[in-house]
Length: 197
Ligand SMILES: C[S@@+](CC[C@H](N)C(=O)[O-])C[C@H]1O[C@@H](n2cnc3c(N)ncnc32)[C@H](O)[C@@H]1O
Image (cartoon, rainbow, N blue to C red; front, side, top):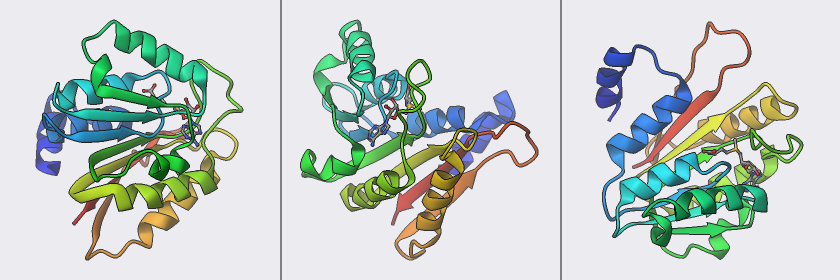
């Protein structure tokens, strides 16, 4: 999988973690699969997931803000993907109340809704709780992607909590990768990729 990403980087040079996450989704998600967008926001990842899983696939999307779900519902209604997406107005830390079978792919884009109230954001404790539940729901060879931002209040603590959790995972059960620019100013995002073995 990484080979494919590196090959593509050859065309566009070093793409940022957010674009890398999209590339990984595009290369790995297959028709008929089930995916979770744990932070729906403006729905960009939800729409991409819905396109990739195809008509026979399923996408679950979580957000605590109705505003985000309304924006996404509106985008979905203008596409042919509406029927394959279930939007849930609840925190991702409660995903085990809604999803009872294993999934192929889970994505998180942490922080706040760019166009919304910046004080409503993901938090270290609920994010780690959700990540634990995500790994239980993930199939073997399933992928989990998490993009963290450190520029806002609480972002650094959240990134450290996410990283501490990922570092603690047994390498016989999970492969964990980190993608980030290490020479950029202004707190560039950090992408973590987890493959369940
Ligand atoms: C950076 S935005 C996501 C952007 C989105 N991926 C997109 O494509 O537009 C983060 C979102 O996480 C949501 N959020 C915050 N805490 C949450 C939680 N506990 N569970 C689910 N979503 C949460 C926020 O409301 C916000 O919409």
